[in-house]
Length: 116
Length: 111
Image: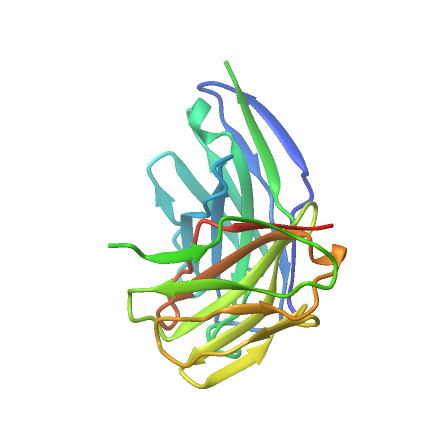
């Protein structure tokens, strides 16, 4: 079974600063997808960024970027120029597309608090 | 474009009562699923479906029942509610190998 570990339950960062969230996963598969989802206080789950394991280039979406280290099975999320609206719970998720149509396995989440 | 719609958003039940959480999507996604979210445990898969008439169990299926009679709808039934089922429930759908699209969640409290 695949596991996803987020070792930081909570992180605090000041506005305009950078914060990095860690995520490690365990799998013997070579083809998989990784995701970061954001859940603000509204409870809505919002996709932040997606990475395919076969792509060596790290995904980037505006102020959000990942550091994907396939050999180390690490998938960290960097939030640059943090804004108050980034305050949310962030979940790392893993999917094997050929495994039962790709069930997502989620980590426990990291609560990010952005302070003025 | 409505996306994934869940109802109700809030519900309080007494132990032993039954209820159905409704989920509908208008994106013609084959894959639909139900997750529950509990503090410190992330989201855990309850049941999922890969098309009309096809369902399967996820990580925590006990106490829940699902059916998929149409592509659009995927209701989750609690047969006899227990306090351990107090949680936030999310319905989600996706195209094959795509990312999940989530509903807004349903907060269920079982007294």
